[in-house]
Amino acid sequence: MNIPKLPLGQGIEWVENWLTTYFSPFFDLILLVIGGMVNGIEAALIFLPSLILIVLLVALTYWVGKWRLALFALIGLLLIDNMGLWDPTMQSLALVLTASILAVLIGVPLGILSAQSNTIRSILTPILDFMQTMPAFVYLLPAVSFFSLGVVPGVIASIIFAIPPTIRLTNLGIRQVSVELVEAADAFGSTPTQKLIKLQLPIALPTIMAGVNQTIMLSLSMVVISSMIGAQGVGALVYRAVSQAKTGAGFEAGIAIVIIAILLDRLTQNVLKSKKE
Image (cartoon, rainbow, N blue to C red; front, side, top):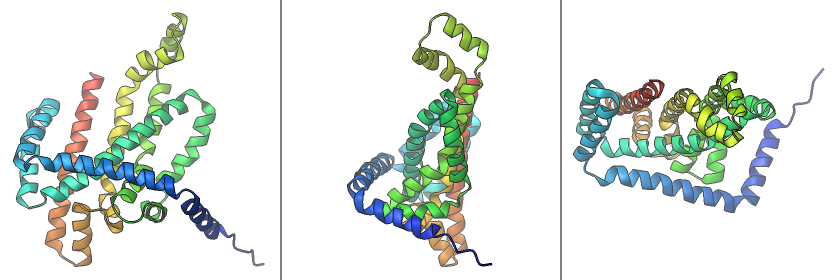
């Protein structure tokens, strides 16, 4: 018995074409806003000479993570500059920071809503499961249809791929706040907003920061994938090295990504430790 194939793919393409036709001005607005944000961050990172920015970043890492992290930052960033990968690395960092900032701005409020309503959590949970298990390459297809080629569809795909940890851990952190503390806040007549801002969010902050750390790491993992649709940076250099079988060039660009990944991870982890203390 032959069961007719469900036209799932055709249905998704119909929805994609419908959105492209009737929501084109909305997508153009998103393209303008996110494109401007990426260009602004990239311009700020490249505005200063590399050595001055390295000194500032080393000072930041020393302030946040003490001398070992500062020494790693100094050696790692000087190595990136020495390999001639400073500008591509800053382009990739601008993409990662833009995606991470937008993911946190969207994800934390959704996590708060999820913690305050079991209905919203029940709706969001399967959506987040879908977003985390779908191969990241698939997100590039509708992103390119809506926003054309370039860095913006890369940022959109990165946000979709990286936002679930922020939502999940914000929800978890708020739900883990002691019931006794919440009841005490209610007994003193706190409004829901006061309870959230003065009690739940401060206690949940270490867990929320753990979600932000995961979001940044997942955004960074999209750097090479985003280069397949025209995003520039060290990811594009890795992609080009793979297509041209240039092992050395690919290895150098890969080292730059690893250095940035370790720096961002240690910085957020040290912020997390300081919040716990």
